[in-house]
Length: 153
Ligand code: SF4
Image 1 (cartoon, rainbow, N blue to C red):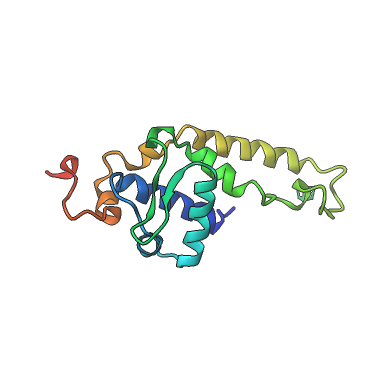
Image 2 (image 1 turned 180 degrees about the vertical axis):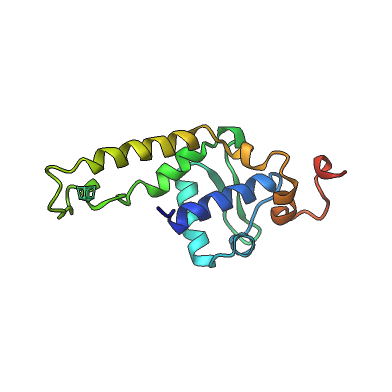
């Protein structure tokens, strides 16, 4: 099992937003923070914008920022959003399925249950859980020069 790059990138972008709550982020700087191409980052930011996770401001001084409080961002929902259109196994998409075992396969049901358990775990995680008090992450993603107060020892 492997997450798609865009799902992983979506969570990295959301973490970058949460670590810079009072700042409009540029696609290029987030691409650098997330070690991804500008094009790929822009595509994922656009999807996050369409789905209401980030707000954008166009123009030279524009950028994007988190549109929701971090505690309202379910990581499970983000994963479902970005993984939803890719069938986990061939038989999960009846339109393209050619598996000869489909009519009698028991494995599909077990995979479905495993996926339900996977998403159930992530449904209990919010963006706040990923960033709050995470000084190591702040050091990696915060663009403001000073260290957050909560991370000063
Ligand atoms: S073997 Fe079973 S789980 Fe795998 S694609 Fe075929 S029907 Fe689906």
